[in-house]
Amino acid sequence: MSLERDHDCPTCDEDRTFYRAASTTIRLGEKVKWRCPECGYSFVTIGDDIDSTATA
Image (cartoon, rainbow, N blue to C red; front, side, top):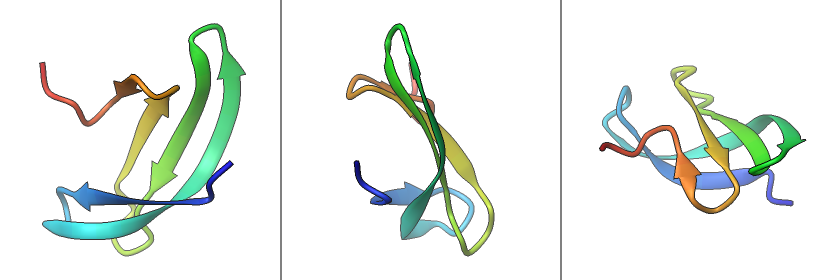
């Protein structure tokens, strides 16, 4: 269980270290909310396959 994750922040316009804000287990896997401490931008991942920042 990682508490930090490096990810591109579209608000800060650079790579930032995001911190785990919340998590829960659902049928698809673990749902985790990640938050940028600099600007407050957040995104959600579910397991290893679903990322709310991904484009279609």
